[in-house]
Image 1: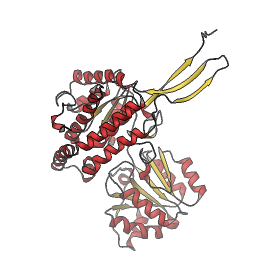
Image 2: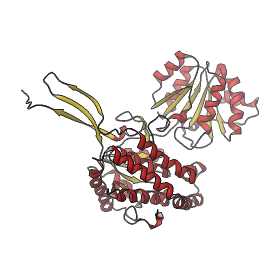
Image 3: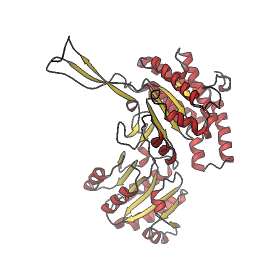
Image 4: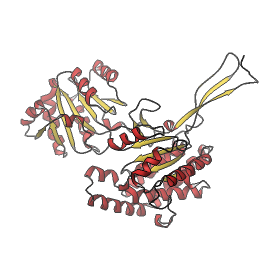
Length: 437
């Protein structure tokens, strides 16, 4: 396969950020969506598999482009967590390609009958899934999102307009060039995958206000980005929220399980939205649990922030715990930091979560069925884990294939958004000359 540097650019020049240029790109995507919409599952799956193979073949070029972004990120002071999100190595490129292959293996949501019936008057009524049309995404330094979003959009019969963060601009250009080349080779318009490259915040604003050309806009990133898009967009938005996630260790918890779940929730990949940021521990098991868990967390590199009871318990283990403030309870750290609080009851744990949760993922560790049922019933979150790590809030882990984001809103989609969430529905009514009296 040709080097990505030899491929045609995914959009017009990198300064393409004027309103006219952004709207022109959106119009091209809308025109391309008409070619994607009627594709059969076989055609879409063949396209995704070709894209996966092409990405693997272009690994060296993609990794080289990513190295340039990483070096610039280090020079500009990006945090370790953000650099980890940005990084693509050979194994991660293979992982991105494998996500496309997994998508190809999933059922096609288009044409699925959500519900239907034959009415007493003989009319046949079906509510059927159909593509959205043009899906747009604004996101930060996560180049894997570029491919995931494109794959999900195409499999669900949509075109996609991508606006990645400037920190990943070289990587995104390389990735999108590969995807567009595969579209062209399949006889499809390359504009079914469009990258808005350059233009700064003005380009984002123009995309947010491209009502009538873009059917839905999905922001994915930090709180400031999401707030800007939600508050300033005239295009319909699906909000993906930040992840201030909690693990609550109940009085009836299996403490070995609790330690493993707390560690995995925090340490497995701390820079992502489903990592735990706060740990709540029932006082009846606090001494035993904290004595076991805090040293393990510190050994894993975690910096602890705790209330008075946590600090007192930590002294017996020789573990340093910094005083926690309201800022700690409210923060999505995205780093190896963890806020820890001892609570007197499940009521106190639920009250803490109600105050500080972002509505993403909350977990309880308990062997008490009534406690788990109450937690599930009373916690208001997109996902609730019972005796499982918060890290399972993920489209791939929950059987959806790649995800386009995790919605924390309550309309249309909530939780990991896979293929079905990128469709809308059409009511199909079939009669035999029926007229309404």
